[in-house]
Image 1 (tube, each protein chain N blue to C red):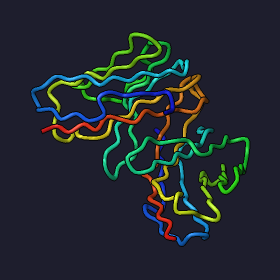
Image 2: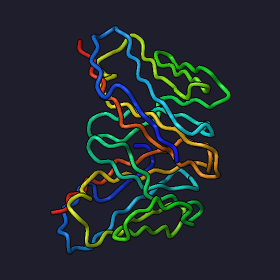
Image 3: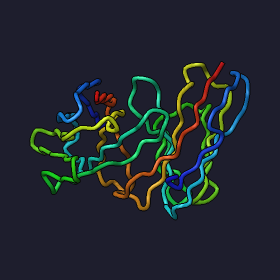
Image 4: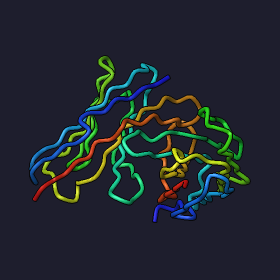
Length: 113
Length: 113
């Protein structure tokens, strides 16, 4: 089955810096890669996603890149702000008729003012 | 609120108790999911229901018993749990199979004593 690895487990940056979180997946049939943000004590929320027919997607300060050959994808946050502090999860799934997401272990991002 | 609600938000139960977790979605989705979130582990998919039929059971112990009476409601019945079952149990729903964003509920924090 699918296995998703995520690095780093913790990431500390200064406000205004960029942050990059990387994930690798094992199943070459996976074609959907969402990123979720979970603030302390709150539910995970989708922040951006990408499908395998696209190499990069941007939404304001957030971008995701996908390298299908290497089977890895990354989340890029520019101009980080303290409110970006949270745990970020990557996930992967394939269109098998239902959306069975396999999640990474999460990255705790701390943005210091 | 995202439209997915869960009750109770916190639950403490003994190993011999029987309790149920409830999830309700108000988004008109046709798939619902149960996840387990433990400290330092990735989100683990437990069950998937599509159009009220269970389509996936990720080898979950029989002490967890799901029920989906209609497309808006999902239950997780618990009995004779173990301390290692203590975790945050998250419900999610999606608009369609194979591609819609999963919306999460706030979770039930379960402690087994």
